[in-house]
Length: 204
Image 1 (cartoon, rainbow, N blue to C red):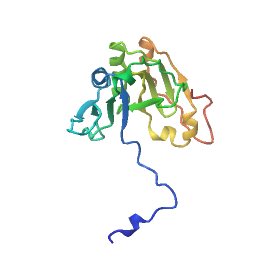
Image 2: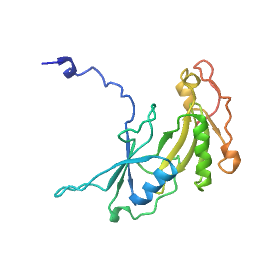
Image 3: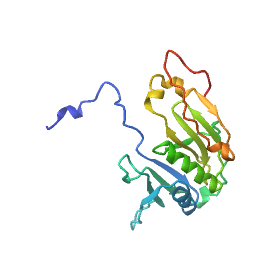
């Protein structure tokens, strides 16, 4: 057989490249479509078509842009729940877990400038900033979609800032204003994390 080695199980799980895509269950596909395309900026690239004699969800697929500026097959999908299961009003999102399930999805913009412009756009559309935090590895704003799914809007700091001590970077948090022009201010001086010297702060 060709490439027999591929069929030999390794002694432990192999690390993945990362999360390929995420599927969110939503109450109203049209409302969620409008939010994820017009407010967040994803592009709808596909929709499940009905197949006679086969049950399929009402579902659409969305793409951001990859490192080359091209769309992907999808980064996000939305699936509409049946009316009987989807008529309950969403709870206000909180970082503190209230039930089992998704806490939030983090979406990255390619650089600081595009992130700042996106924040200004979100504010102009009246999207509430629920949290504004400078983490050790990202600068982030937390918002929610129409179904209460938490969304972290972020740009990632350079690898040399956080790679020396990922645990320290994860535990660092600078809480910032969530309203007005102060919520759009972003400083460029960031602590550099090294396992030997950890900045003292707590990520919450």
